[in-house]
Image 1 (tube, rainbow, N blue to C red):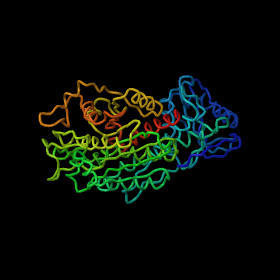
Image 2 (cartoon, rainbow, N blue to C red):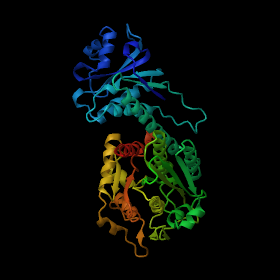
Image 3 (spheres, rainbow, N blue to C red):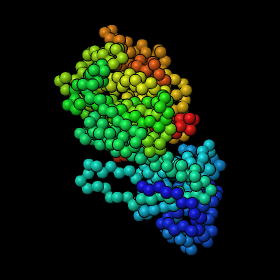
Image 4 (cartoon, rainbow, N blue to C red):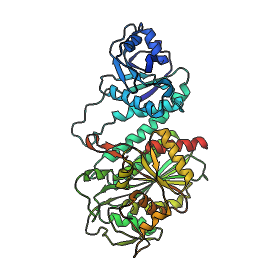
Length: 495
């Protein structure tokens, strides 16, 4: 999809479809007023007839406009003009994009950035338009012999006469985020026989090759063995696919500036190991690498926007399979940090690969470390599919992530990380057990990781409920790429 700025008067524009906002009580936005004037009052007539009532997220496509150079118009309702929240704005944008998806329209001029959203600016409005219009037009055709019919819409121009610079900034940010989300979706939607740890490593190298200040390094199992990553490598033993430790390093800040480090779980398929998962829904375990996909998407977006920050992405990638050499319940392994771990459940493998990656992160002298992982089904039970779980050892970092999530509309909810939960990880035979029982599974998983993050500010995002959808809409969501990029934008603005 192409996203452009249109900063000429509406009277001079020609387009297949003009998108304008209407509100409750038959109130017209400025662009809708202009359209109404150009068409002899047709918009007012339509509202008075009640064809669109002004309720939030209503849409009406008008296929004929007399006296105007516009072939069609799409009316999008935003409800009460004075009570337009960020979530309501995005809901209406989603409805507009969904309506356009079913038409034969190839290009539109969108005037929805002029809506006044409580607490937001024109740049944010424009970015949300790009993200909302891009999402429903994502198609996964990599593995189909006959690709799905190509969708018609290919060009969206955002109109503004007074805030062109702010709108263009929003367009640039929206494109970077949307492309990062699309990358994360595509890599996540690929099956496990294609998207292997080696494939993920190749993707990182390809992304790094596109930007001069982005570099990739891939550590092989022999190198990880020398580093003492016994916990990580114990997971990969059950797979024929060699494990990879993937590092992407973006240098956009000062040479001496401490980097922001993202760590993403990269289990390209999780069968559960010896603690085998049930067969129902096991195909969705290709999504156990969505944390790594988000790291790739966020680093690509940061490089595309040339943010004045130093950022490191670390991806521990493996499969978890039930081979004769796989971990067994009761095995004890030694992590890179020197802590011994009793493996009581081989399906709690994500924390086993993450703990060594989190120890490895110390070599970069990080300012903060944020890991993201499809870590616990308990998070889905606790929070559903709306927010990702947030835990951490630093209030400032967690508050910053929460605030970024509110702006990005990529929700998180913080859970406690109290010392009382640590007792559930006690082992009679090792320093720590890899599970803490049924109670508070999301929290005890984070407690496990916290044992390896004491030397820096750290936050953990459990995205098990938000990284993909099941059922008829099965597919990756690309979350939490919008949250991560918003956090980076906030850091860049603060700097």
